[in-house]
Image (cartoon, rainbow, N blue to C red; front, side, top):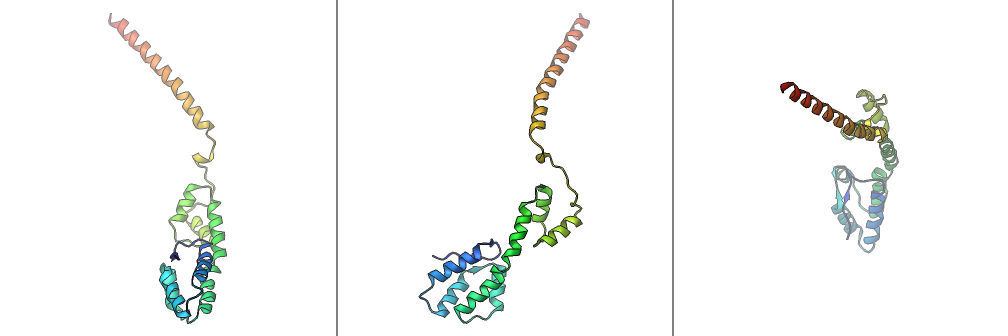
Length: 161
């Protein structure tokens, strides 16, 4: 059973894996049958556009042309994905997720435009020591406030008597 190839969400390894799997499973078929099955397994806007713009008559031509738009562009995508994984700032990462950016140069320009080129400290970047210190001081402060409230109530009761 051959899986579908989703060109819009394809990661770096998927086009090559799909091509190798397709080639191995359709060895005994004629050129026309192979091309027909290949066309049925392509999904996604980019793959549809690519298929409609090409005139492929043999499987050998298909192997070469499929490699060019999908496999040769993967090195740039891999660099961009590594760039995104290296972002430690959640705000920058969320901004790039919501943007139409596709490469490192565009991502840099987008972040400059959004005024995010300066490093910003996030609460998550610091260790949990500060948050545990705050949690430890809260009960002692509450206890002292409760003691003060009790003293005030005793004083008020004594004044009324």
